[in-house]
Length: 202
Image (cartoon, rainbow, N blue to C red):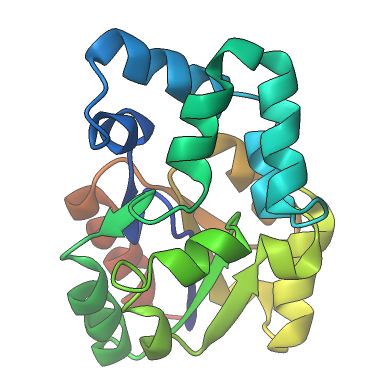
């Protein structure tokens, strides 16, 4: 029986749209795409989530790869306010899951700076029983140790857990630990699949 719902954050509980973020600075489409590719589309972006390097170091790596964009990278990523935005479905969904008798946790590749800069988008945070942010553990999904960490931290039985993520490559490792999974493709689909699991009989 499923008793615990573990949710990803970006794309599931908050909106994440790099192009929209760069457009918000007034850049035309071509430049917004160029900046998104050079930063959020680079191999360095996940280092914010891993939490090993400082923000300044990560920006310097991006600038070294794209020196012509130095001023624009510094202008747009000196903070991360607006990198993720609020999803109106997040709080009602968590409350619904509680009404169904589930405990709700988060397991997310997420950066410390984004957590502090995007408080409004993270308003659902206090409703969860707990969770794991990648930057706190200095490892990111699908590293097996981060799945092990959330199970151990809250003494969760994997057979009683379902994990929902919009990034498919993060699901097989959860299944390796015996956690059931739902690939988030849209809100209605994810709610329907998780509700069905919660209502299964032993």
